[in-house]
Image (cartoon, rainbow, N blue to C red):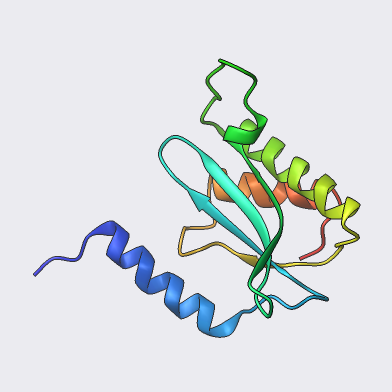
Length: 119
């Protein structure tokens, strides 16, 4: 009985989420990476509310396809950090959502750090 890649990721996600949680003082920065896009949001787990979000879809200009590379992921991270600064959010807990900390995921995290978020 083989386990799919997505099922393995879901197991890792559960293992990670047991240990980390977002609070109003230090919300959780969670990412999701699909084949076409990368999404990031800052979540307060106590109230269950998304405080800030950004994605390649949100940054794409009208009628233009976003590139699926690390540079675009870095831009999403910087955009998210700028929006978080407007909400007076400075420190977050990083939740990689079961994905390897590599490639686009790492680029998004580095972009958020460049934008001023601490984690």
